[in-house]
Image (tube, rainbow, N blue to C red; front, side):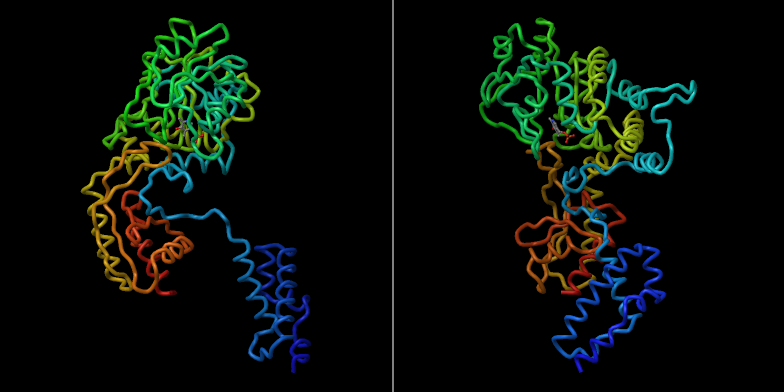
Length: 465
Ligand SMILES: *Cc1c(COP(=O)(O)O)cnc(C)c1O
């Protein structure tokens, strides 16, 4: 019996002739298809040798279909769409800032064709890729000049190296941040060949601490925004105004690592306490840096704005070639900047700004919709729309809770942690929070057109339980 079954397995060349497999070869390539057929035949042989699988389909067509399913699974893209119901707007692990439609379209156009990345259309002469965004940044921030690199981490490195290589950079002990990953200020200083000169203490640094540290080898003064932590209690730090005045007195450049780039005022808790790059530029900071994908709401980028002479020096550094922004991000950044030049359209069209400034009434209405729809599918318990607290994320506004509307629920069919895992591994993937042993869906980060699909994903996960 077993031997007969084994002998009945078709040969590779017979399977290759089937129409199913011929189609698969077009979509996946001969090599991948043949190797998957071999793997599958080996597995079949193995199974047939052990037990009697009289109802195992071994026709060339059946094998073709099975191989097709396996190829789809094996070549499923690792990067997929995610529905973010965590309420964390700048969720770094979920790609931080979603971009405005205008920005995403510009990135698509740049990606799928040719653009005048480094050529002046009028003269036909070679130009700098930075020209596309420089003027808009200068208009928006009212600075002399600007340049952009891959992210704010790269901006910090190239700025420190250009301004203070082999010289001391004075920094408060209260601002030696780690942003996550391996971005730690002391290490960034080392990589940049700047000599870190710490002053003050963790909780208190006064302007006179900076002043007494100034010596013949001082290259710059830096203020780093403590984006992702707050020191509370008995604290003091020098203001950017004081630092700039001190820089002027000793003719030293002042660098402001503003971090999140809160450029336009927004009706959102704590937002207006984030350092505004426009302010430090107007006060006279030599260089101000911030991320493109935090509160600017654009693509990943590091924006460096400030004095012309420094920008020139930065652009002539060999690191610039390694750190420069690619065409897709440049195109998306340009559109994001254009939207920012009209502050009312910015808060409507840039998703990050829209989500951060959405009214509680609007969130409430969405929560009621979701609550009703969840109640209709069954399988869930204790479904409730309610007010809760959320965070901006992305290392911004770390201690600033934002009131938000959520819908939370549990299911009698499955424990909450397992359900959360199931939702995450669904198609599309749904990311949620867990609180008090319930799944929490935060309406702040759920788009209007994602409510129905969210309900479908939950239903799917509970049904197949
Ligand atoms: C977020 C942040 C950075 C790093 O920015 P990326 O764009 O993520 O590289 C650097 N400095 C400060 C103060 C930040 O908040």
